[in-house]
Length: 519
Image 1 (spheres, one colour):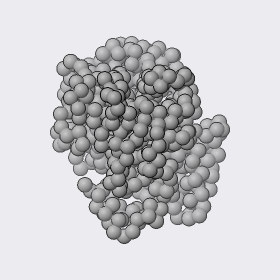
Image 2 (image 1 turned 90 degrees about the horizontal axis):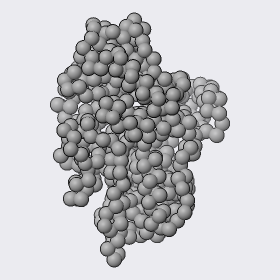
Image 3 (image 1 turned 30 degrees about the horizontal axis):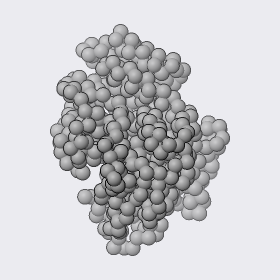
Image 4 (image 1 turned 45 degrees about the horizontal axis):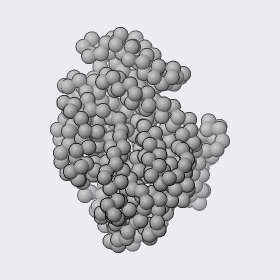
């Protein structure tokens, strides 16, 4: 993946502005259909909401309470497809739901809800089907949960991903099919001719140069930045969500819990050898360019979790955190947690299309609607090109057999088993590029941080081949070390110096990049 800002000078059928999950799926689908596509993003790929999710590919069990059956069915259908077309990128994850004496939803209601969830998913087999567990068995699954008043609970299946790498792989797929995809290309203004959008003026954040991108159709997939205009504020409601990163718990399964403070659902999720705790869901009216984790957010999540844990977490246990803003369809719901997560396409009077709302899980199907609308305007035939299509980095062989073979190779190279598992998930069929780096320099098979399954060779490949401009791109999204570990300045500098030759950085640039990680 190489960045080429000057390639935006060509004329395109479609310009997509916004390099999160919706922009990536739209660009990928359109490129597969043969459109000349440009995708621009003002920051790094997935640098806003699309890398600030709960890392889940799920139907949204909690949406059954608001009777949003259509959205749940749609998301479950996408979950099933993604598990098949991207087994390296999306993998099964079981969830536990405890039932306590004072639980808002008791055993009978949860049994009914989970049966409906399985029904909407098309009566799945293992590992997706739900099961009821009595007190003893449930406690053995989740030994860290308080047992006082525990009646038992349920487990059910959903799926997990690395959201930033999901977006990155789709961008790579678009590039491979002829799209021009440029990160750090900031939209200065949409251009018009005869009252119709005909492209945009875009600035290269790295050099300051500007150019005009000419396009017959334009799509705005900028999420929270849609509210920068009066029209966007009419269409969108913003909700802030935060996640905390905490030490690992003794389980490979997740937990769905209901906060006793206000009845909201939140998750405790294993991820890369740590635990994600989240999310909050509060109306947001702050600076869309600077979304931060507040002390009140941290206090809320820790208090919610500690009511269920045998050993309470404190702020000192928090390893990292992140915040994001969801742009949802405007609604009159009293609380954002009750607002619909469904999606809609808006088209302004100048012909500019806007993607409003949506979910990480169902973004592909929504992108199909966008590209269909674009093709109608262009007078082009052809339907969806992404349904049931294998992901760009999916191995061509049987996935289980391929995984076993690659794991053996990794072990022979001195890569530990857990790191090897995550290497396959992170890189798919590109993993042999990591192996080549290790063959050339065996010490690069070592872990960067002892508790985390990341090796130096992986970091080096990301720096060389994944359109990295800044150290924060590398350490927050390509490999999320900045939120999964408390790295000191010397450790960050050591990593910057390792990748400096691949990125063409001199000593001054290394210092600059290290300092920027603390801004």
